[in-house]
Image (cartoon, rainbow, N blue to C red; front, side, top):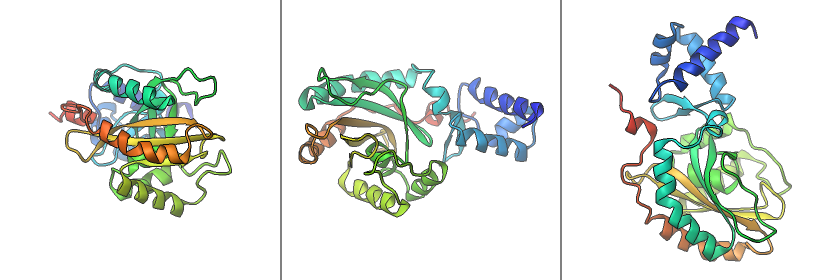
Length: 259
């Protein structure tokens, strides 16, 4: 990479980060003075690296997980965390396991709130931690509420990884598990990301009842957070999540409409 290429990339990145709303390719091109073909290549590289996120249905670009994980506390996120805090604490009290709230930063998800149990053996999660949309229960719960084409996009941008022997190894199996999550309304994973740890995840739908704005995850050790316990608690979590007040909480493009 030449110095000029690096500078063009930084110009595109800072243009988007400085904007109060997500920007389209055409807008980035106009603001940077770079032609669309060059901007498209830069944007694609930054999305692949996690520095930018693209809303696939618009498409517009905003800060990606590699940036967002270090810049917590946007007004929209603060409202979401505030409205879900009681739910997260309730679930943590009922299950005794780690409860995390993830928000999408395509093609990843970032933890913005976490309730950690007092057990010495638990799933260690931290605010700012991220997972890909092609990973385990959290990713499948999110994709299950999105058009099927986005599952393919997630698999392309974030190929399957295999941190444990229980990880999903084939795209076909991943697609099938997304379909299962779509029917059930939740997703479960068994030691897929961390050995001896299981997870249950449920999406929070926006006020249009079709677009997920976040995912609630409950994770814990297999000897305590068993398949049976997860299956029994899943309907309880789905019902509890459905009561979250999501009025006025939409994706960034809805908060910052095109002029």
